[in-house]
Amino acid sequence: MKRTRTATTLGAAMLASLALGTSTAAAEPLGVLQLPAHSLVVSGLVVPGIHGAAVSVTSAGPGDVTFAAPTRPEACATTFGGALVRIDYLNVATGAAGTTTVRPCTSFLDPTPEASTVHTGPGLVVFSIGVTGSDYRPSAGQPSLPGLGTFTAP
Image (cartoon, rainbow, N blue to C red; front, side, top):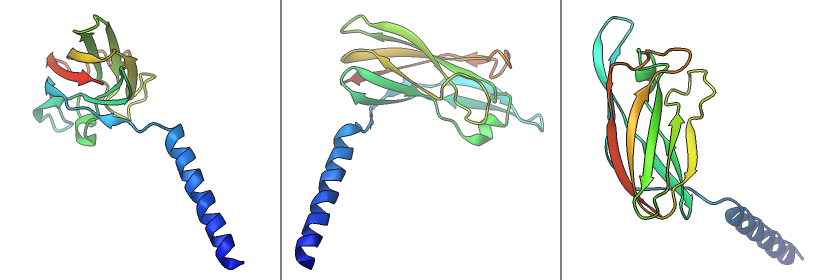
């Protein structure tokens, strides 16, 4: 009796894990070749520095990619704190193009999302990266230099 109950419980647990595994697709990171956008930042002690706003790209399905620009909390404590990262992309194979904006500092209260999922279609995608100010802090992260990159979308 105990052996049957254990086997039934184990079988139910395996089926539940399979059901959970198929219902949520795990996002896979994509290899991105890029030159990040660079921004002049100044801390509260008036110490200047340079911050590189790099973009990470993941894919959960064919042609769908998620852009994000995560950054360190130290950078968010500088004049970069209210900045946004704009990504303009073009799929060379399909001609699909668009623009999306993400918020790199999670502590900054702005309605812009921390990650943005777009449909680029499969193939080679090129993109440019720009640091822009937000409505709250229009000069955040300025002056800055744009960046660029490329990856292959599944």
